[in-house]
Image 1 (spheres, rainbow, N blue to C red):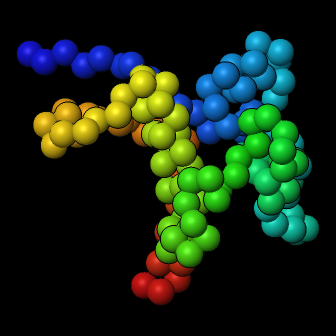
Image 2: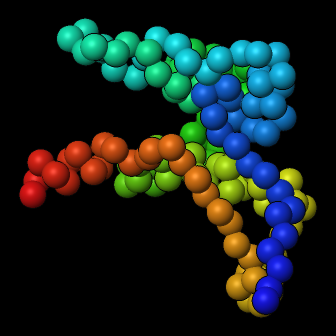
Length: 135
């Protein structure tokens, strides 16, 4: 049997970007739930959600504030056009986890022995809905 060792953590949550920022929010008793800012909620029964605070203003994010997510620090605007935000979030969390572990695999063997576990409540609904319409 092989051992699995968790050596690093990475988080991108409605409380903010980063393990430290998210943990601080939990300890302070803050909620990441607030009014939906990503789209107009008129006509919908629900107007609140747990959005990721980002520099584009969604989720109440303000550029320059700690814990506010900046897509461009992870992926170029050109590359972002080809993927859902969910993918950018997963890459950001994985990058943080690898940095937290101080793990910089350089050889093929080291890279092959590296794993990243990504969890999400739900992600990529936009592309799923678009595909359903096409089908």
